[in-house]
Image (cartoon, rainbow, N blue to C red; front, side):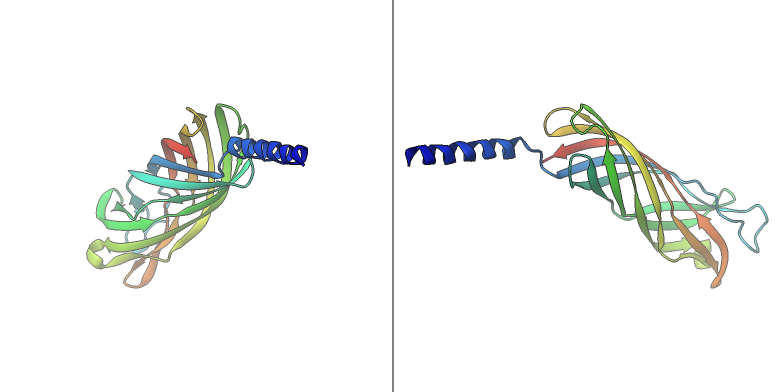
Length: 202
């Protein structure tokens, strides 16, 4: 009996050690992200053949939550709060707009046990537009946007929990510009998003 109890205790000890050595599946990052819109919108109908809608560059805060299904595969949810941008027509400001752009990505991490841990990801972006104030209320952006998102980046481990993060994403964000209720242009924001931040693995 004593040998059996000793064997059980030894097994529980080994299992406890393995569990404590295993990393948590949760990783949270905080990033500063610079949005650089592509601004490849169609010309605005009825204004001018070369006049196009543009959206201002901006640096925003971002929080993302990742869940690791195993060492290599993870899902990442990217979150922020509604961001306000200046909107221009042929370089002249015509108003502002707010957008909220959560993004969900599936990632592959190449070297999960190394200090330098590169990854790639792909997923979907959902952006909702609000507080459209364009051309003194004569124009607005219609529709929420659903588009593709591509990602590449790397985590650099500092210790067991903390890491530095470098990340780049290309996100498809598009909407229709309405003037007097009629579609006047297809707005293609499609920003390149460059980010740096810190991560914490629980």
